[in-house]
Length: 462
Image (cartoon, rainbow, N blue to C red; front, side, top):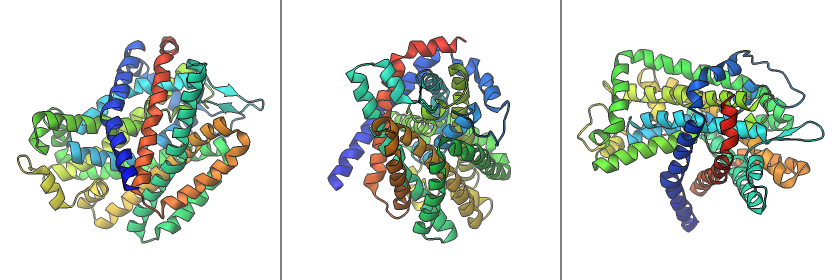
């Protein structure tokens, strides 16, 4: 097991630090150019289509989803524990400047996710009963209608089922169990049973119930998190100018804070910002196209709607996390203020700060430990539970593609079991395997996106 863990960790390091940064950042730049920066030209158009007829009672559709329901299902997947824990880790390791690189990768990622949504709708298929099926497996086969395409599609489907439907569900459930147990003293396995029951109820209802739940959860969790964040920022309002200054300063001069050589420090800041940002907004991973494929609208319209999901995930939620952390911990009387020139990692160790407790500490510093723990527990409960729902749906589409409609019941039972197991077992191998499969999803997806770039370009001209 230890040997396998070492191998998986090495693969993850190579993929995240080199291969995926080049592919995903390069893909974002490429699609920005061929769409004439659709993320700038059509951003407000996307907001109009997404929120013009905003309602948390979208209602069931005979087939498919409304653009907002599809966006809600996508954002439910995007806004997960990574927006709290992932952002915290990026700041701790790469310094506050890592947030600048997150913003940059999100800007280009908006063009990539536009391409994914466009292709998902253009290549989706409809059953005899009107049920829609769409996602990367379908546009991969459209891009390569041969044996190579079949192999790529099967590879993507297996990686998605493992990464999102099973191991990803365990990881998210574990975050819920640990956080709620710490905040409320409830055994993790009890939380696991409750979450599994509620999730199973949604799974049974299919895509219409998923849409009904996520279109309510997403606005609610956004309001709770932003309200708590604004409370912290108002308490530290005098430090906000310094907070933004640190983000831009340490994006290009991280050595002044985290130490090491100039090249090493800059590489650390960029790599942390890029890879954490990429896997927060999921642009290019091939996960959210499953939701956008269900939208009953045109490819271009849903493409612009999809872009707003990346904006909300990074520019709003993830940025709020960053501002909360930096304004309370790196400025004024914070434990990491004025540490330039000292041993950064030694100070971190002595302060007892980790990526899992950073936001709790930040909120507690302007209120109390009770409020800090409970705020993070409630937010993580919303974030992780909504991610479980959407990831299960994405995995289900690929399970249906591989094994047919009748086998989907087996998938749902296994996924519910994984939720419970995730709150009782913590294995580094499971966590690393989930990361590896998550990253392997990108390879066939990005290949197909490049192959069908002409279809994307033509849609962006409308």
